[in-house]
Picture 1 (cartoon, rainbow, N blue to C red):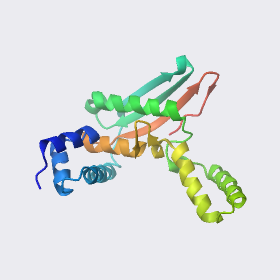
Picture 2: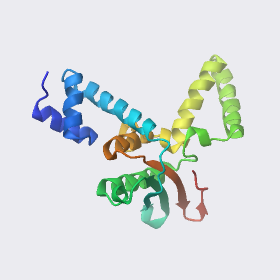
Picture 3: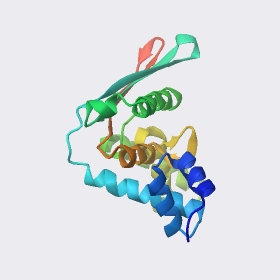
Picture 4: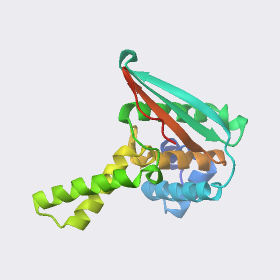
Amino acid sequence: MAASLEAVKKLREATSAGIMECRKALEEAGGDHDKAIALLHERGAAAALAKEGRRAEEGAIMAYVHHGGKLGALVEVNCETDFVARNEEFIALARELAMQVAATSPKFLAKEDVPEDYLAAQRKEFAVQAATVGKPVEPFVAERVEQHLATVCLLEQPYIRDASLTVSQLVTDKVAKFKERIRVKRFVVYKLGQAEDAAG
């Protein structure tokens, strides 16, 4: 089934993928917009995985300051080439991530960065909650830990402009677009009178 120009345009606006990629995804999805988005996300994830071992030493450090100068964030985002580092869309991604960090104050970059003693303390707290509300402990704790990680880990958080995407998926979509590795290396949040630890 051939995709209409209007459907391709709508999908491109929703995903920032190339015209040919959008047309192909729509044709494979039988014209279903949501299925086409899912296909593009899957391809982005596959592209990101293929590029995982590549060096990414170019990039940008972006800042976002909010609340009349009382809250700010710095984020370092890396890519492979200076060409991509100077691209407006890449710079916009780094700015968006700085805004995400300022808005949500994550404690860690990714799940892998969460210390075991921190997780153990959370599990203990959730086990007490499970007993209080009379729920089976193990499934209750597992669910609560996943929800907590989606709050405190930047890459697991819902993207502030589109909660259907995680920050990780947002970055993965850009990997598919730029055809090179992109990674969030570290961040730091500054609140007037205190600074939280940098992550990454």
